[in-house]
Image 1 (spheres, helix red, strand yellow):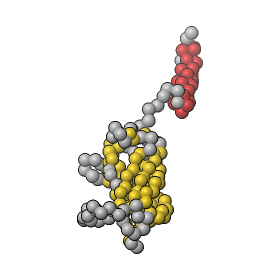
Image 2 (cartoon, one colour; image 1 turned 120 degrees about the vertical axis):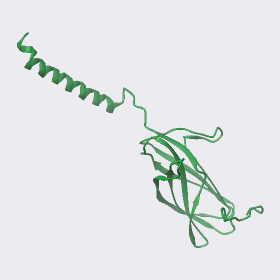
Image 3 (cartoon, helix red, strand yellow; image 1 turned 135 degrees about the horizontal axis):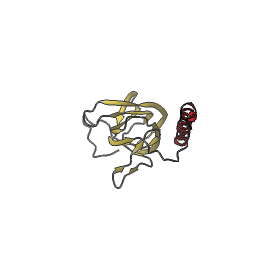
Image 4 (cartoon, helix red, strand yellow; image 1 turned 90 degrees about the horizontal axis):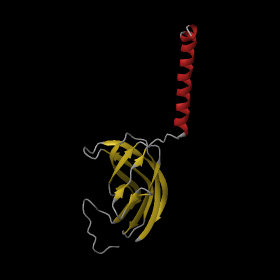
Length: 172
């Protein structure tokens, strides 16, 4: 228990919650790399309870907001992760996987943790982070692009062949 903690309306309980976006975030530099559509990111949480009673973590969720207006643009599907029992001054680590498939732009990532504390179901937040979602870059040697180029080339060659046989072949 933290002797210096004073409950307030904004923070009535003494829980320390932190998370990072695995393999995308440099904590020391404070930089979050671009998130690409089609990939799955992992949010790695650290949760410490400084309350005298046990708390149970039962799920995670969240949403992506417009950073200017605060309007919710997408929900992060809530998923069950426990229950994970956390005693006083105990640190637990857990992860949440989030699939990215959004319009390319900046979003405010607002994670949520669902807990049961003193027989009450509660929703806790953590630090919001600004993330940039972009479409992945496509290489000229991408197999899907190569197949599309091959089909397009064969179609153009077929049309040229048919046009030559139908019109130009008679006169040459």
